[in-house]
Image (cartoon, rainbow, N blue to C red; front, side, top):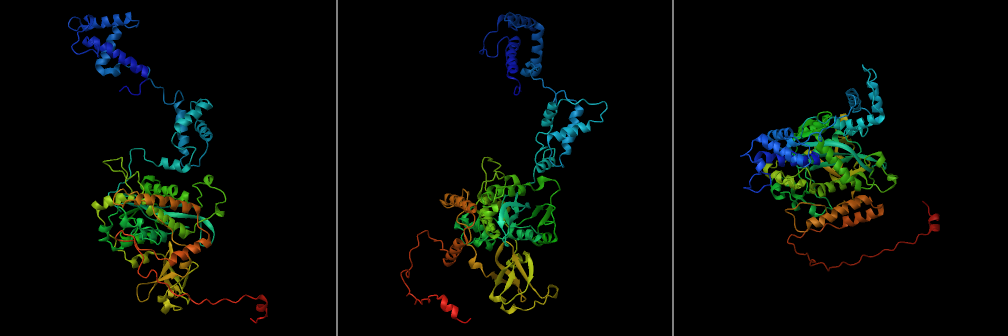
Length: 604
C-alpha cells in the first residue's frame, strides 16, 4: 500500500504507527513477548483519553508540536484504515493532468491531433496552428498559453501516437482496439493460416537483364509459425498465389547439393510415422507439409481473384478475407515477412534497405542474384534457419521460459491433432500451375526465351492441337519458380514433361548444410555442424553470384560427379574391387596449324 509514496511520507507514517500502537496496547510493536506495559500507557490503569494525553505530553517534551486532539485523530484513522491512514497525503497530492491550461485548449489540441491520423505527416507547429484555428470562434474567447506551454502540452497529448512520425505507424495505432484484445489462436497445424505479399528489399537481375525489386508472397501457419511456402516474383499475380497453395500442400524435395542434415528423416519431425500416411515424404526436406483449413488474406485483387478462389475451392480451403483497417486479423504473416527481411534479406548482395533513406549507393553495379538463384537461397534458408529457429510466440504454457522451433511445435501438435495428407497427385499439382498456349516446333517449345524439348513431343511437332479457340496451339503449364521443366498436355491423357535444353549449363544448385536448433532426435554433432553451414549460407548470399567462368566450371564439375550415397552402417566406404582398373589412352589427333595466308586464298 505504501509503494509509490514519497519516502519521507512513508517514514513519518511508520513513526506514528509505533506511538499509536503504544497508546492502544501499552507496548511498542517491537517489544519482546510478555514485556510489561509502561505505567503511563497501561490499559489496565488508565483510560484511552488519559493515554492519548500522556502520549501528547511525551511528544511535546521531545520537541514535537503535538496535542491530545492530534493523537486522537491519528489513532482513529489508524484503527479505520491501518498504516495508510497515518500518511500525510499532502506529500502525495497530484497536480492536474495538464496543469492550469484551459480545458478547451486541451480539447482543441486533441481534435487537431486526431485529424492527423489519415493525413500526411506534419510538424508540431502545424498542430499548434490548427489548435488556434479551432479556438478562433470560441465564446467566451480563449486565452492561449505561451508557446512553450503549448509544445509541452502537445508532447503529452501526442505521446505514443506518432502524430509527427510515420503515417503508416500512426494509422496502425489508430486501428488498434481501445479495450482489451487478443489474436485468434490455433490449436492444430493448418487450422488457421495467413497469406500476404510485400516488397522484397533486394535488387534482382531479371530475365531481361534489367535490375529491379521483386515481391515476396508467403504463407504462415499460426499454430506452428511454419512458413509453408514463400515465392519471389516481379509482380504478384493471382496465379502466383495459386501456385503458393500448391506448394503448401506439396513436400519440399531435397535438391541436389543440399546436405542430408536438411532431410526430414534427420529432423525432429516424425518422419517415419508421417511416411506411413504420405509416401511423398520419402525424399522430402525438413519442412512440414500443412494442409490449410482456413486462409486469411487481405482484400487485394490478387487474393480476391477468381483463379485464387477456384484454387481454394479445389483444395477444400475456406478463404477468409480480413477486416479492413484491422491489423490484428493477419498480424502473424506481416511480422513474419518483416522477419524474413531482417534475418535473411539484409545478408543478400543487393540489399536496398526498407526505405529510401536507408538505401546505399551503386547497388546495381555490384553482384546481383538472378530470380531463380535468389529463390533457391530463400528456399534453403527457410528449411535451414527459419524452421529451426526458436520463436518467442511458441513458448510452452507450463514452462514459459522455454521456446520451441517451428518444427518442434509441429512435431508436438501433430501427435494430438494428427495428419491428413491432401489427395493431390502430380497431375493435380500441374493443373494448378499457370497455363500458356504455344506451338510445338521442331526444336521444341519456346517459353520465356527458353527452349524446352523431350522425345515424347515427337508425334506433336508442327501439328495443330485442334483447339480452334487457341489458334491450334498446345496447352503448356509451367512453374514460375522452377524453370527447369514445363508440362505439355498429352492428347492421349496426362502430361508430357519437357526439360530446358540449357539445363546442364545452369548454375549449380546452392546449399551445403543448414542450421538446425532441434534439441531432440538429432544425431550427435548435427547441430554444431549445421550452425557453421548457415553462417556459410549467409556469407555466400552476401558475396553474390560467382563469375560466369567459375559458375561454368562448378556446374560441369557438379554434373560430372554423381552424389556419393550415404553409408548405412556408419562404417567408412572403401575402394571397390575395380578401383585400380585403368583404360587405355585414346589416340590423339593433332590439329593443323592455322595459316591466315592460306585461308585467304581458299574459296568459300
